[in-house]
Image (cartoon, rainbow, N blue to C red; front, side):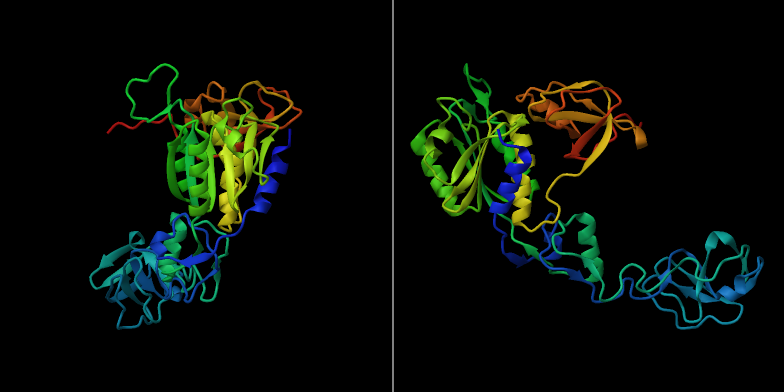
Length: 409
């Protein structure tokens, strides 16, 4: 059996970087930047108020009780036509440009109107509640480096800078198919004996799209060598990566292995990991091919460890692996010391007291447990048990959500 890290390194070294394209900024979510984003202007590009209140000179509010003459108002989107002078103020709204002469904003809650004047009740330091020009981003600043995968907040930053056409890596076209005569459409109401619904393929479609891929679904392929050979041939021409599930183990009816056993560029690998021991990887006509196991949890683990990092590498992403952290085991964990083991766990507690507890049964067919888990507890080779309270490495594949609180409406 080969170590996981060795297999993954070999895969990542073998995939090719995709070319680039320009997209509208509001279509850049989930895309990987191929060029640095440099701001062409200060953000904000003018000094403005962070509060509703009064724009004043800091020198006039060094003592409490100052009485200032109010010259007028300046709402957001307008510019004051008058300057603030000695013992004067202008009523200002959040986001409005600072009037000439003013360098400080007093919150409205700290004032009282007295006719055409305003009484300042507190001492306010010079520059308080003023957003300086360039306080967020400076003109010429490299805001995002190449290799960043764009999230919603990144898209918002592009918008505020006026960067409307970022250069990103092209999305990989990935063909997906599931194999096996026993697989039936998910909508099947009454399953015949020995039949199961195909969960791997719809799950893989979602996993692939989440990794930035453009998915081409080749459907369910039966245990027919000619049918599978033809589907793989089409996918090798039409896509930039192929992902299948099932048929890569040691059985006599593992059709994927039967079809590809003479392909010199495809290896059938036994990996020292659980779940997900069998894996096929190589190239079909130059197209990367991933043959994943048939058990659904094995599909998830294998995808996370091999396929997702490869697709992100193809897109030029800097971060291709899920974040890891160490927490306390919430219970005694017993694993296979001959393999690296990925237990599906939930995270409980808060702050420094986070604990990892098994989410349920750990068999490789129990997909419902993977659905409610927050992370993998990654137990390295050579470790058979981790006692409750001892440190355990976890790999986050989703952010835990608060489960305990309910609010009456």
